[in-house]
Image (cartoon, rainbow, N blue to C red; front, top):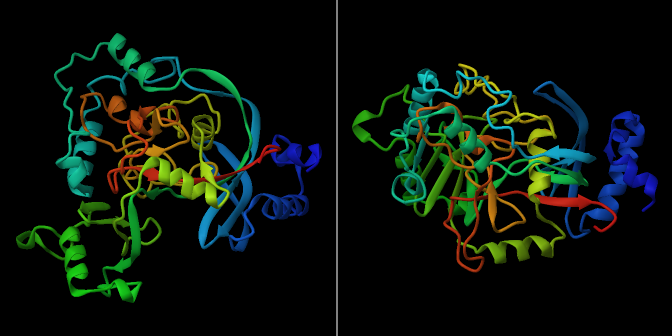
Length: 369
């Protein structure tokens, strides 16, 4: 591929191209960088606007799964070492109790998960700690990656991450009471799904809210973000970190590197969160909150209810489950920061806990690809 091509897939050049030239570039990307055994069935021009940024790009169906073209960029500034700089003092204090209780209510009502309630990964309580400005600043800096300047290649990125160690068995429709894949539908399976949706028989009523994610081994269900009457359903199918990476590489794909993940999340904006540095009162109102929306690239990334996302670095994960551990809402929301570093994988050969981690596939568009 020529140098002109690799310039064209980077911003700011990409933004200056006509729609016709962009389509030609996209066709060349699919021809030269996507494994020919994978079926490309749809290429759709799309535009997204989020956090004051707008991008025109393409959504591609690869083997029936949505991928987004993310233009690359040189000299991106990533990471965070600014502590409380640029943040609201009110958000960093214990005064935002309406957000604290909204998070607690959200976790109780919408996240019903055995690995959140029975395992020792979460459920840490630091509410007794006195939240001085020094403590909060240090907590933010220690929880995020260091400030740095990097070059990011153009990428084809899976739009939405998938839970690791689970096998998809179909969509359950709460109206029809049926699974979309008939061969996986048994009376026992339907009963298990319905028990997760409405666990307390005596409290069932017509207007009861469904959990958005529910888990009881070996089953996990997640409400479809485009249709709340549909739940994506999975059963346990454990896999190790090493085996997962090998499976992806067989099809010419891989995991995002930490730099790439942060760029895909926040677009190299100097903001702690992809939407900005402010915590608005409506943060847990699903219809208007950025916690559930596509970002400036059209990706569902650092969203609520996906858990830690695996990257091409066993020492860290990105994103994470939300929990109410501190009195200051900002600290509780740090897993959704563009620069947050979660705990890594201790043993690459050991099976990962089904349904706890997420994975997102990527294809790099660079001269080494």
